[in-house]
Length: 202
Image (cartoon, rainbow, N blue to C red; front, side, top):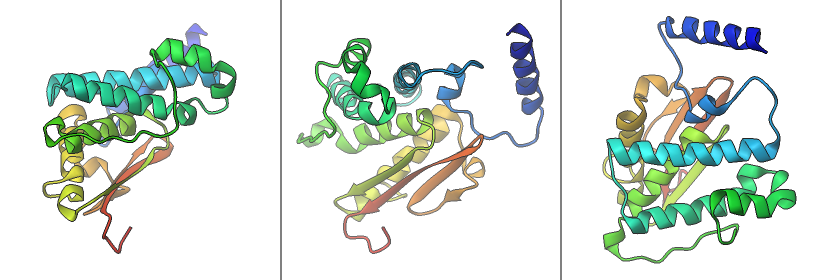
């Protein structure tokens, strides 16, 4: 397998010399040449989400204890999706690996303004966008101001992608408009869309 590693290394170095290099997901750093099981891949993705949140902590927004607790609940609610078929057969191991007391398929949150709900969900959406292959994230806010590109959710996500991971408008060739960010990562496209619940365009 050593020769395959050398080939991969050379290809990576050559790609850096290209004029345009598509954004690299943090998840890509966990992918190795041998095929992984769904359980192993799920663990890698969860590790990548945590790693990306830590990057945002360091570079942009150090989360409060409450925000960290919310993010852990959100990760638990996404476990069945991320682990795919391995979830039912490895649920106990998944909970132990990620320190999830329980796993539910949805999370409902009621919190005071001081929590910073918009920022909290923007941070998590950005981390998942950077970590999960084929991500299609749709956010529906209760008002246009909370959803929008000028001051709301999408504005925050764009700032986090730029300052946390160096992703600019030029990198988002698949879509960069008032409601959607879409980038190509290798052979797959990921997107985040943010709408007001009153929007006619969603």
